[in-house]
Image (cartoon, rainbow, N blue to C red; front, side, top):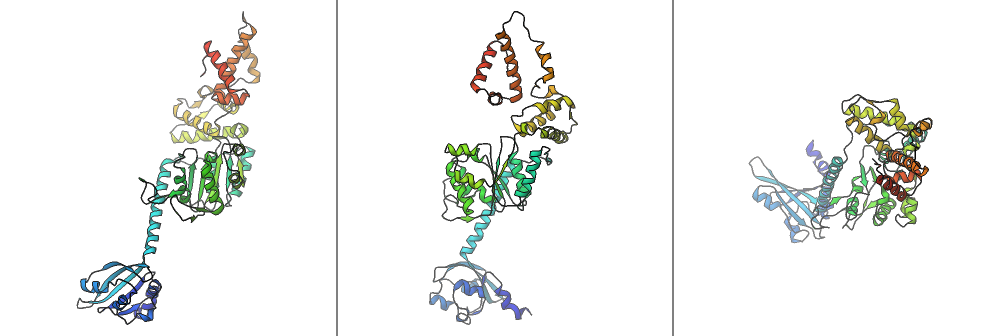
Length: 462
């Protein structure tokens, strides 16, 4: 049965197949052989292969060497049209142990180069993913999402809709509000969830390296670089999502190249003359006012409007106070479990956290709770354990004023002391002079000068 179908079986091969007898006469050629050599099938069968070398149809035939050496032989054959084929000849022995036939497989050298390129690309991807996985460790146990405020509940609904599209997304918000978390959620709820999610921190990559990091380079472009070249982060995100964190820090030159990718869906490695089409979803985030950056000539307006299709603006934590306590308790449950402890916040600590300004937003809250889970010796967290002081409430103001020393002191001296108390409390609440100045709507140099004056009088600011 196989004898009846042998021709059809060999025609399914992607390689050319040539079978010759021990004299070099061709007795079978499959259809791919004709495609590769360009020589009609009927003009070769029953002819000796050496005839075609005499006609300069090609320069090499390996059949005689296979018959003579009784071993497999591999050589490169160049056709009259300049095409190069890889020949791989194998001897077929009869019952007496003599070589009865030679089977030669023909492969296009350019196809082998293409396969080698695919292997190289896969190796580069593995290197990139290994690097990213080692530098971006995830928590041992996935934290649940907490969104109690109306604004975040509404945003969750927007994310569900946006995630199902391929449109670029621009996430705006102060440092620490959770832009990274939203970007990952968009990816995880999209049809690309099982594909790569690559984060590019635009503010931390050296300007000298950012082009090769984003777009990669071909081998031989730089001395001392990988001789096989390197895949870029955008290319590594193929069929998945690339997240440009702090895109406002991206140099103008790279903004131009990113815009070209968004428009054409193609990337070109440094040192290459060819482009590669990619299917990659772009999510970008920044804490900058991009419209002001455009006015200052620091950001391209065309890139901004290309990204400004689906915009998510995350409010600071101080403007969504309904999220503060649920998040604090969730973080404490998570880290208590992680470190093998059983802890809780007191009602007074809850009140203190609820009234605090959280200049560092969710990141500050999370890091504070993790620190408490590690360092607090008690199982119940009190206001005294918190790294900031609670300001007195309105009903407690009279009690605080009753401690003021009026005896023999001028109004100016008393006010100066109270000013020191206010600045001390503000420093504990807002963390630094820049945040104090912003919150109290005072010039930063004024706050700095007043603190220095009070320090000379013996007041310490901690």
